Image 1 (spheres, rainbow, N blue to C red):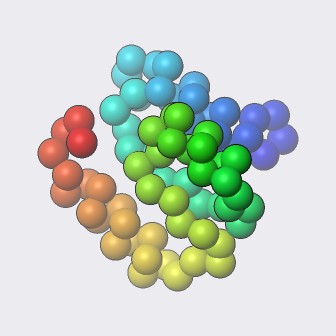
Image 2 (image 1 turned 90 degrees about the horizontal axis):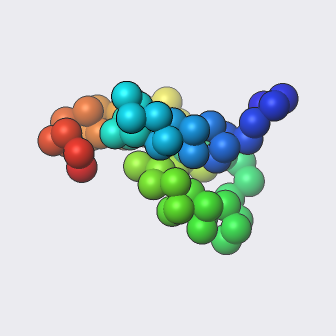
Length: 71
């Protein structure tokens, strides 16, 4: 992304009281230990590695939508 990384976007979401409970799915082709630590710090709901299958993404979204609010 040109101006912010995906993790920076997640940090901004978590700072916004209207969006802080929004579950975030990180889709990445650059999964490293450093990214894992950062993802944990910004409370990413789940991570999907590229390349991914569409059914995997849809199942993940459905699972997150089924969770009680605040989970």
